[in-house]
Amino acid sequence: MSKINRRNFIKLAGGATLSGLSIGFPFVSFGATHKVVVVGGGVGGCTVAKYLRKLDPNIEVTLIEAKPKYQTCFLSNEVLSGDRTMDSLTFGYDGLKKHGITVVHDRVVGIDPNKKSVRTAGGKSFAYDRCVVSPGVDFKWEAIKGYNPKVAETITHAWYAGPQTMTLRKQLLAMKDGGTAIIVAPPNPFKCPPGPYERAAQMAMYFKHHKPKSKVIILDPKDAFSKQGLFIQGWTRYYGYGTDKSMIEWVSGAGGGKVEALHAKKRTLVGLVDEFKGDVVNIIPPQKAGKIAFDADLVDGDWCPVNKKTFESKRHAGIHVLGDASDAAKMPKSAYAANSQAKVAAAAIVNALNGREPGTPAYVNTCYSLIAQDWGISVAAVYKLNESTNIIESVKGSGGVTPMDASPKLHRQEVIYAHSWFKNVVHDMMG
Image (cartoon, rainbow, N blue to C red; front, top):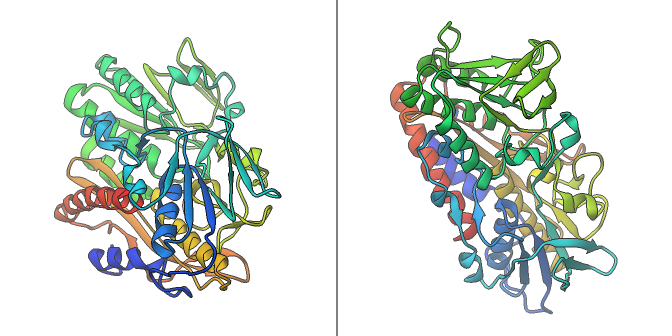
């Protein structure tokens, strides 16, 4: 990072989202008990549930999540290279229960903002004073003709860590040396902006060691992508990018990278200019807010409009929307952004339930990408709210990116930082 010391930034990041707010830590209320129901057990949901209890132990917090285990999407691309196991990405919810949070494994099918209740597929109803919805993303399946949830069981998106991650890994293992893996990247905005390009590097890393005649093609509707210069630098160093023996090829939108259709049986993709056939095909579709956000009438277009000072929905009072589903521009849709937003929302909710005005929020984001076993890159920033425009803007001079002239030692340190960051985020949300 070019502006401030890395460790100092992480220390700042840990407290920035709560500092400057109008409550202390913890805040103890002696009034009536309030109820908050959290929908979604990912980064945003877990973090907000935990920090609600830490800020005000008198609040009854119920977290509702369909899956009994959480599997992190962040760093899951390492599974594709063989550097990480799925078990290392898998965590239970017992840590949240130790904070006094009631964890219910069920699927939410309805939220009634008038009755202030949440209804589940199991037939239960949960009353709330405030509700937090952190549903992640869903896919716009109609965007690519021939691609749908059934086809995705074999031609995976693997954009949620889990069975599809392992399916994609097994397909790479089974692919012949000299074969081609194709990644179809989505248009902006989408969850984890650097993800497709890190995925290409992790696939190429596996090929380099085990199938050196193979290559990865990225078909991209965009003409630029997150941390592009740093990715190309790493791809060039390790995978011969830009040469006739490159293991990675990026086809931009202007170069015909937009995909319009899939012929699943032939594993052929139809672009605006050419057709592309892959031995392994990985399609990451265009994205929108998770299904429950649409069912609960929290969206305007594809995403959920919110008051970014509190993350309260602009469509229904008393409901807060966090993480990838929210329209939190100019913050990226990332795990650490969701963690940061969750702390802002937790403080705002505690203030509201105790008759206080929300304080002045601050937000942070850090994102690591691993290009090779000893070559990591990152971007980080501190953000503030422009209340007149309701836009979250980066603070000038905060954070930064890995320098283009960084030494190999610094890139090795970035890998260490990434793995440490992973452990810290998981502990912060679930520990």
